[in-house]
Length: 234
Ligand code: IPE
Ligand code: IPE
Ligand code: MG
Image 1: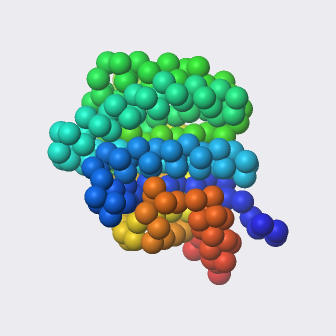
Image 2: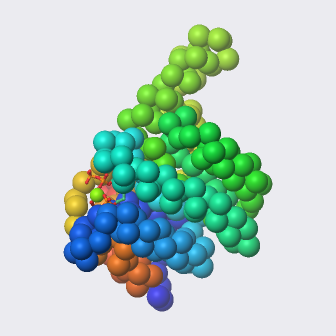
């Protein structure tokens, strides 16, 4: 990839696992299992490309509506991957969980906290995993934190601006996503990074996430490079 600008931050909505499984007459959880393998490889690739941040949307605040069997399978898979996450040890990634951890069981919550603290001082790519993440929930959470500070007197109303507000989001300190990628053919944002995507490019692809390859990411980055971003200017 010559003369290509590598984005600083990519947001990826890992969608299409269920349809991938259905096409093969497999249970939906087999699609999630394959999707998790793809997640692992694409993470490595993002490291190789030298991204500053990457955010993977893995489970939304709305995904609890799914059948219990699918949720149980997903929780098992998350646990397996979080234990395995120390595989990234060699990669120097700083792992950050975006979302409300309180909905998960104690074991998962402890694993998440442990991974975050063990990787907190790392200097490599920020690997954001959006788990029980909803952007509206994130914004409400930020408002509550700010309101609390104002009522305690550690922040004044005049201190509230776009920057200080963003500092209360789960993505604090990270650049906004340059582009949001959604495979699977759906063309919607589904409560992902609503504040942060104000000037993100949107790239939709027909490939189902379990079939997604490094080449597909190359095409998405090439597509991003063909866009003319103006940020409101001329
Ligand atoms: C995305 O794949 C994974 C999660 C939301 C957990 P889906 O499970 O939404 O796959 P489709 O959209 O049904 O194909
Ligand atoms: C968005 O996908 C959430 C994740 C990929 C984790 P969904 O499959 O839940 O979104 P909708 O229901 O198609 O909007
Ligand atoms: Mg879906």
